[in-house]
Amino acid sequence: MKYTTFNQKTVNTMLEPMFFGNPVNVARYDQQKHPIFEKLIEKQISFFWRPEEVDVSKDRVDFSRLTAAEKHIFTSNLKYQTLLDSVQGRSPNIAFLPIISLPELETWVETWSFFETIHSRSYTHILRNLFSDPSDIFEDIVVNDEIKRRATDISKYYDDLIFATQLYQTVGEGTHIVDGEEHLITMRELKKKLFLCMNSVNALEAIRFYVSFACTFAFAERELMEGNSKIIRLIARDENIHLTSTQHILNLWSKGKDDPEMAEIAKECENEARVIFLTAVQQEKEWAKYLFKDGSMLGLNEEILHDYVEYIANQRMAAIGLKPEFKSKSNPLPWMNNYLSSDNVQVAPQEVEVSSYLVSQIDSEVNADDFGDFDL
Amino acid sequence: MSKNEVSNDTDNPRIKLNNTLVSCTKGETVLDALERNGVEVQFNCREGFCGVCRTKLLNGKVNYLVDPLAFIDDDEILSCCTTPRSDIEINIEN
Image (spheres, rainbow over the protein chains, first blue to last red):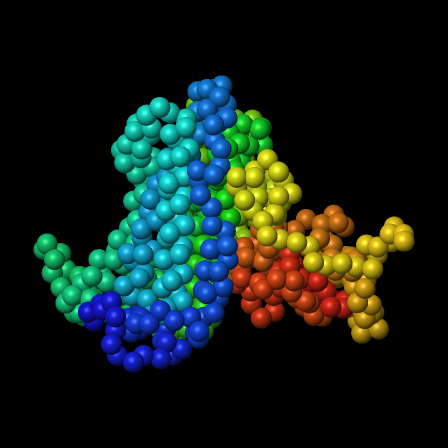
């Protein structure tokens, strides 16, 4: 079916599935099949921030004092974060928008991607401050084997879905030969590709980002690179919302609350979904080895990072109905919660030094006890 | 929790988790009450959108302080943004 930017057929979106129904026509939010996406949009927009509002100038001094091993950990981590957001800033738009059938989900995906572009811009803000010419860092992302290996796995499910969708929307269902290669395009196959892609995105948001956050916050725990940490804290808060959205999509499918065929596919492909998740876990463990190849840093080493990956993997697997894989243990990095808690993220980044700063908020709750020491 | 153990003291409801009984102060969230009593619970955002504090609610009812955005099943609650309406029984899987 050809994609159209304004579908002139009257469609009741309350009866449409999230994906592969009719293309969306009117961007209306007065009625929603899945109101959760509208709520996520509102929450995400309320988190709006600009990287330039965070002062990262002190980080330059800290950076110059890091050991060579720590510098390697810090810059490699930033490179990886840059890769993740480069992919996430465009891919949900390109892969999902052409096949979405609900206005609230369409706008959610656009909102989600837009915030990833804020993240991408913040890496430039951070790197410009640390290096007079950050070109080497950016250029290495495309040639560094360790990063490329991850990039391959992150982008392949997206690329596969995008290519199949393009074929479907130009030549329709059937077996098509492109560059001598045969491609079977059926709705079932497309939906399977979508399911696997969503699982891969979920693993990225659930596991890959968090390993990088742990590295960033380990520096902040030692009161180093705090400007960077303030930015990553804002990014982490956004990523938490993005993760919630992919968990919702996967659960809506598997619990039969959207497209019944997707519920079948979720069951049929459960093992593949599990493999995607565990592959991401394994890759993150290998990444930890690369990060700490020249030596570890105070408070964080390869083993602790492995334990942390397993710890969050169990929680994230349970959240999408997969049986946890690893032996349950207590949080190996309990201080991570201080950075991931919304309470500790300042509302206005420009007021970072004032911890109690709140914008347009008053405490409207007054109890009789509040007047206890009040005499006339 | 057997029937005669259930109190409807809404000012000081109790939380039963496995074999421990934790009491809540008025307006205290389930998560805060558990932490105050030294129970290790997973959490991240503390604002109802990350879902890390997802908890099975076996008995009782809760009030939400904010609209929960994270995915929760019909028999689950988010401990970070709920206060018990009366005594409750929960189970934490992780």
